[in-house]
Image (cartoon, rainbow, N blue to C red; front, side, top):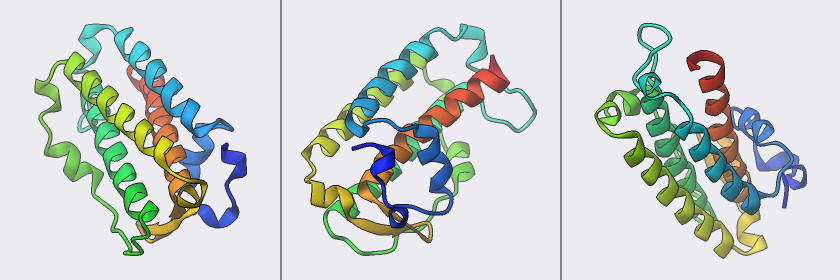
Amino acid sequence: MTTSDLLENEYSGGFTNYIREAGDTTLIEELEISLHQFIKFVQNIPMHKFDYRYAEGKWTIKDIIQHIIDCERIFAYRALRFSRNDNTSLPSFDEDSYANSTNSNNRSIQDLLTEFSALRHSNLLFYKSLSEEQLKRIGTASNNNISVRALGFVIIGHQKHHQKVFEERYL
Protein backbone atom coordinates (compact mmCIF):
# COMPACT_ATOMS: atom_id res chain seq x y z
CA MET A 1 0.00 0.00 0.00
CA THR A 2 1.32 3.43 -1.01
CA THR A 3 0.13 7.01 -0.58
CA SER A 4 -1.35 6.87 -4.09
CA ASP A 5 -3.68 4.11 -2.82
CA LEU A 6 -5.28 6.52 -0.33
CA LEU A 7 -8.78 7.67 -1.24
CA GLU A 8 -9.86 11.32 -1.04
CA ASN A 9 -12.00 10.68 2.04
CA GLU A 10 -9.11 9.13 4.01
CA TYR A 11 -7.48 12.39 5.06
CA SER A 12 -7.99 16.13 5.01
CA GLY A 13 -6.86 19.38 6.51
CA GLY A 14 -3.46 19.69 8.10
CA PHE A 15 -2.67 16.04 7.40
CA THR A 16 -2.38 16.64 3.65
CA ASN A 17 1.09 18.21 3.75
CA TYR A 18 2.55 15.36 5.79
CA ILE A 19 1.10 12.72 3.49
CA ARG A 20 2.52 14.61 0.51
CA GLU A 21 5.87 14.82 2.33
CA ALA A 22 5.88 11.02 2.77
CA GLY A 23 6.06 10.63 -1.01
CA ASP A 24 4.60 7.74 -2.95
CA THR A 25 6.13 5.09 -0.74
CA THR A 26 5.07 1.73 0.67
CA LEU A 27 3.89 2.19 4.24
CA ILE A 28 5.63 -0.67 6.08
CA GLU A 29 8.87 -0.39 4.12
CA GLU A 30 9.07 3.38 4.53
CA LEU A 31 8.33 3.24 8.26
CA GLU A 32 11.44 1.08 8.55
CA ILE A 33 13.63 2.86 5.99
CA SER A 34 12.86 6.32 7.36
CA LEU A 35 13.77 5.13 10.86
CA HIS A 36 17.27 4.18 9.78
CA GLN A 37 17.70 7.22 7.55
CA PHE A 38 16.72 9.56 10.39
CA ILE A 39 19.05 7.96 12.92
CA LYS A 40 21.95 8.10 10.47
CA PHE A 41 21.10 11.71 9.60
CA VAL A 42 20.99 12.79 13.26
CA GLN A 43 24.20 10.92 14.11
CA ASN A 44 25.99 13.00 11.44
CA ILE A 45 24.93 16.32 12.98
CA PRO A 46 27.84 18.02 14.79
CA MET A 47 27.46 17.78 18.58
CA HIS A 48 27.48 21.56 19.09
CA LYS A 49 24.34 21.89 16.94
CA PHE A 50 21.99 19.84 19.15
CA ASP A 51 21.36 22.75 21.54
CA TYR A 52 21.38 25.42 18.80
CA ARG A 53 18.34 27.64 18.15
CA TYR A 54 18.29 29.49 14.83
CA ALA A 55 16.21 32.29 16.41
CA GLU A 56 15.03 33.29 19.86
CA GLY A 57 12.08 31.19 21.01
CA LYS A 58 12.69 28.46 18.43
CA TRP A 59 13.19 24.84 19.39
CA THR A 60 16.56 23.11 19.53
CA ILE A 61 17.29 20.00 17.50
CA LYS A 62 16.78 17.97 20.68
CA ASP A 63 13.41 19.68 21.19
CA ILE A 64 12.38 18.79 17.65
CA ILE A 65 13.44 15.15 18.03
CA GLN A 66 11.33 14.97 21.20
CA HIS A 67 8.49 16.63 19.27
CA ILE A 68 8.76 13.98 16.53
CA ILE A 69 8.60 11.27 19.21
CA ASP A 70 5.61 12.86 20.96
CA CYS A 71 3.71 13.32 17.70
CA GLU A 72 4.41 9.79 16.55
CA ARG A 73 2.99 8.52 19.86
CA ILE A 74 -0.14 10.61 19.38
CA PHE A 75 -0.60 9.62 15.73
CA ALA A 76 -0.12 5.94 16.61
CA TYR A 77 -2.58 6.23 19.50
CA ARG A 78 -5.13 7.67 17.11
CA ALA A 79 -4.44 4.85 14.65
CA LEU A 80 -4.89 2.26 17.42
CA ARG A 81 -8.24 3.72 18.47
CA PHE A 82 -9.56 3.97 14.93
CA SER A 83 -8.31 0.48 14.01
CA ARG A 84 -10.30 -0.90 16.94
CA ASN A 85 -13.52 0.78 15.75
CA ASP A 86 -13.44 3.54 18.36
CA ASN A 87 -15.47 6.29 16.72
CA THR A 88 -14.78 8.90 19.39
CA SER A 89 -13.65 12.18 17.85
CA LEU A 90 -10.15 12.86 19.16
CA PRO A 91 -9.02 16.39 20.00
CA SER A 92 -6.00 18.21 18.68
CA PHE A 93 -3.04 18.91 20.95
CA ASP A 94 -0.89 21.94 21.66
CA GLU A 95 2.58 21.09 20.34
CA ASP A 96 4.10 24.15 22.02
CA SER A 97 2.75 23.08 25.40
CA TYR A 98 4.26 19.64 24.88
CA ALA A 99 7.62 21.10 23.81
CA ASN A 100 7.71 23.45 26.79
CA SER A 101 7.03 20.54 29.15
CA THR A 102 9.85 18.21 28.13
CA ASN A 103 13.31 17.66 29.46
CA SER A 104 14.76 17.08 26.00
CA ASN A 105 17.69 19.48 26.29
CA ASN A 106 18.94 17.66 29.39
CA ARG A 107 18.87 14.30 27.61
CA SER A 108 21.62 12.78 25.53
CA ILE A 109 21.10 12.51 21.80
CA GLN A 110 21.62 8.76 22.13
CA ASP A 111 18.74 8.49 24.63
CA LEU A 112 16.46 10.42 22.28
CA LEU A 113 17.42 8.24 19.31
CA THR A 114 16.97 5.07 21.36
CA GLU A 115 13.49 6.19 22.38
CA PHE A 116 12.66 7.10 18.78
CA SER A 117 13.89 3.71 17.56
CA ALA A 118 11.94 1.78 20.20
CA LEU A 119 8.77 3.70 19.42
CA ARG A 120 9.13 3.21 15.67
CA HIS A 121 9.78 -0.51 16.07
CA SER A 122 6.66 -0.77 18.20
CA ASN A 123 4.64 1.08 15.56
CA LEU A 124 6.06 -1.12 12.82
CA LEU A 125 4.81 -4.20 14.67
CA PHE A 126 1.45 -2.52 15.20
CA TYR A 127 1.03 -1.66 11.51
CA LYS A 128 2.17 -5.12 10.42
CA SER A 129 -0.52 -6.64 12.64
CA LEU A 130 -3.41 -4.79 10.99
CA SER A 131 -5.74 -6.27 8.41
CA GLU A 132 -6.62 -4.41 5.22
CA GLU A 133 -10.00 -3.61 6.74
CA GLN A 134 -8.44 -2.15 9.88
CA LEU A 135 -6.00 -0.04 7.84
CA LYS A 136 -8.91 1.54 5.94
CA ARG A 137 -10.94 2.47 9.02
CA ILE A 138 -11.51 6.19 9.39
CA GLY A 139 -11.84 8.31 12.48
CA THR A 140 -11.84 11.98 13.36
CA ALA A 141 -8.85 13.73 14.91
CA SER A 142 -8.30 17.47 15.18
CA ASN A 143 -11.68 17.93 13.47
CA ASN A 144 -10.44 16.12 10.34
CA ASN A 145 -11.21 12.65 9.01
CA ILE A 146 -8.22 10.35 8.69
CA SER A 147 -7.73 6.64 8.11
CA VAL A 148 -5.43 4.34 10.03
CA ARG A 149 -3.19 3.88 7.01
CA ALA A 150 -3.10 7.63 6.32
CA LEU A 151 -1.90 8.14 9.90
CA GLY A 152 1.01 5.83 9.14
CA PHE A 153 1.99 8.07 6.24
CA VAL A 154 1.54 11.12 8.47
CA ILE A 155 4.12 9.62 10.86
CA ILE A 156 6.57 9.30 7.97
CA GLY A 157 5.82 12.70 6.46
CA HIS A 158 6.03 14.52 9.78
CA GLN A 159 9.48 13.07 10.40
CA LYS A 160 10.63 13.98 6.87
CA HIS A 161 9.24 17.50 7.24
CA HIS A 162 11.34 18.10 10.34
CA GLN A 163 14.43 16.55 8.79
CA LYS A 164 14.12 19.18 6.04
CA VAL A 165 13.77 21.88 8.70
CA PHE A 166 17.03 20.65 10.25
CA GLU A 167 18.77 20.89 6.88
CA GLU A 168 17.36 24.32 6.01
CA ARG A 169 17.53 26.14 9.34
CA TYR A 170 19.93 24.35 11.67
CA LEU A 171 22.81 22.99 9.61
